[in-house]
Length: 170
Ligand code: 5GP
Ligand code: ZN
Image (cartoon, rainbow, N blue to C red; front, side):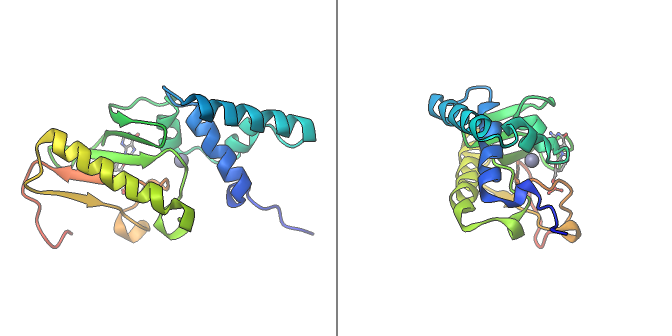
């Protein structure tokens, strides 16, 4: 018997999920909404699962929920590609999480096409650090895997600063 493949593993499905996440953004771009609409109509025509079903097939991801405004967060920055918010358990005076709106599990599972968004998260961290005037010393951290302390499996960058940061980190 053929094993059912997770829709998240399929490139097309993950693009649909990305569109769904983006169109749920507080200020979605018109072209994203229009692309999502075309996709929904195409899927309705060819009888495949509606886009929302594909999205719901992902077990509850807290960061997807935050991005979509379904769970509360203290917004620091947002655009069509990333959402940044205050960490709920801050480890420094500045502790912001910068999260791609696309659900990428972690760095191990990132695809070549994710390089741009991962780099972009770093530039947003630099922008926030500039605005917070913590450029005399800050750190960006991307935990990968449970032994590193990764607890949320939706790739995110920590921006930590506003105090002396020891090295090596624990
Ligand atoms: P990780 O350990 O996966 O690298 O980082 C996850 C971070 O997300 C942790 O620092 C944790 O405090 C934060 N976090 C977990 N759940 C929530 C939440 O619901 N809201 C916010 N704002 N931060 C969260
Ligand atoms: Zn997610």
